[in-house]
Image (cartoon, rainbow, N blue to C red):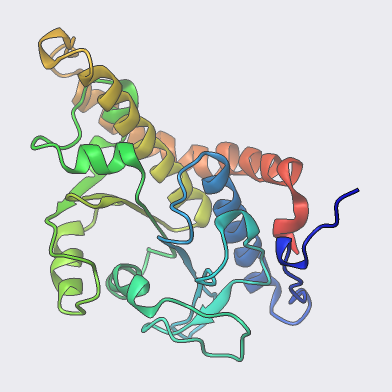
Length: 262
């Protein structure tokens, strides 16, 4: 039998019992979200981030170690950082402060933005590069479309000055297409942010598939139906995230590999 290289896995000491119960719960939820992002094929090697606010008065956040694949992230490996993405406690892991620029902007500006998810999927990038953005051509798109803001591309997001413009464009909405770049979603919980990014990504994927047959062949919904569906989505998505979809997704994450909760 071939030997398994010691580099195939990483020994990460557990933080359970060493942090508050509230922080541990957020750590488990965020680690599950990383694993689920990998499961759905939305990861981008070690790049992009999911972040979550640590409960408490300090402005501290949880961020993935920069050198771990999303499928390796665990609750204990998540790094606690400040608003600049700098670790606030000793950690054996490295972080990417520049990659936290987008997240820190949203966390600082929005008290309700306890979780922020940013992705670079091919379908999300494709729709972000489409002149008309997200089209109301599927139920999924109509459910999320009114919550989608847009931010023009300014280069790799390392300029702190860009944060002011990004949050101004986001406003009070909970999702964003970063033009020529990718997708973003925010939520009061990790589950809510995950469900928002799920709907946005699925809508982008369906749009690219539909456009592959040519815009002339699109069937647009009847007048007024996108607006009705958008109102239904504002209530339904939040309820589904907290009580239905996220608990089910957590169970799925445990079935796939329970090590995320270690």
